Image 1: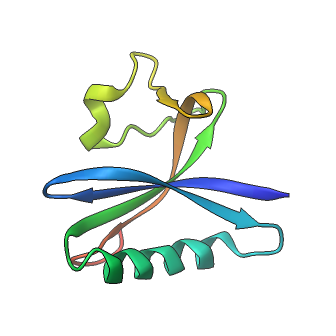
Image 2: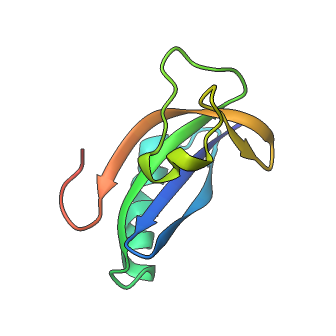
Length: 101
C-alpha cells in the first residue's frame, strides 16, 4: 500500500503541483523533507515555498485552500485533479527562503 501526497510549489513567477508517492514502510515526513531538499537544489533558488497536502476524495472537516490557487477552487473548496474532484488536507508548509510554518 502507498500513500499519495501533493506538493504545491510556489515561486514569484507562478507555481506547480507535484505528486509525492510514499511507499509502505516509508516515513511520510522523511519523504516530504527529502522532496523539500530536492526542490531547493533543483529550483536554483526560484522556488519560494512548498506546501504538502493530502488529497481527499470527500470533503474533510477543514479543507485547505492554497492561497495562490483560490481562483481555481470550486465553491465547495474542491479542486479538479487528474484523479477527479478532490479536497486538500494541509500537512505542512515550508518556506524555502526561511523557516518552516
